Length: 357
Image (cartoon, rainbow, N blue to C red; front, side):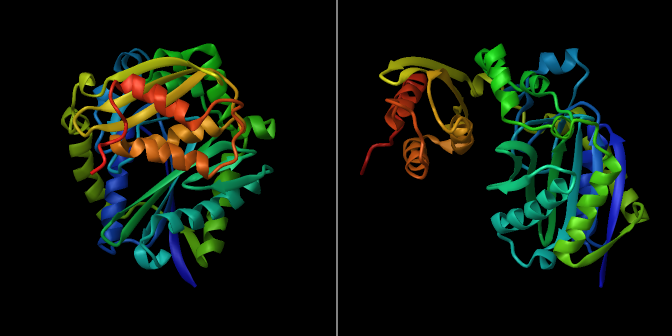
């Protein structure tokens, strides 16, 4: 039987949690520690992906007014809001533990195990590609992973009593997404464990369930432990770099370099609005939001389309929209995929298709 380690580093400000990310990942890469499961909590934090600019991604005035610390992760991905109403869990593994470098298969394996642990609390949690865990089609956990050499950091969150409105206000998004209707719609797409159970969940039981699920999945046994002297040393070095304004400003670009472009158009299927954040430097559609007086079933279709179009190069937008609808059965009455393309074209004020050779 192989023995792995489980840590609980408690509630910490974001700089400390990110510094621990780096310290544990470096230590695992150097084979100084066994594979490790870490539980963590954040004080209110707006966390940027490694390559993101705070000015372009966050409502910095809101963060400052509400005591929300801004910090940069060591991993990629989009900006997220994290606070005490979520439990974080992380696996620090070696490539040989998972037997592959294919992140999709790794996500499937780890998320299935995590979904089993969450289900044991009394809900029906299921993995949903690419990297979400859902209950009745509503997101209760988001995950993501990254390799550093042969070391893997795989991270997950579990929503306990999450404030969706605060999350939306932290991000730099169009005002339309902050309307009462839009906030209510966003709430419908996430699931809080407390609401599902009708009571405050036992955090200790959550940790035990996840630990046991990963023990079973990887055929190992976890032992509770503390940070090693090596990790402490690596942590102190990392914290001196990360707990600085220079680290947060590592990728600093003006908001004008990623304008939010908006358009509205009337179609046979209804009035369709779009807002899109467009990276003028890379000519990439960073994020898109669709709203309007339209009928779409299943209801989650629009949210799925928005996720599909995130970080899409301009010349890939139209084929990605067409592929999205071709792969699904969607009832939109008279609305068509071409309508989504047309309103996006109007917002961007340029053709979505690159000229054919």
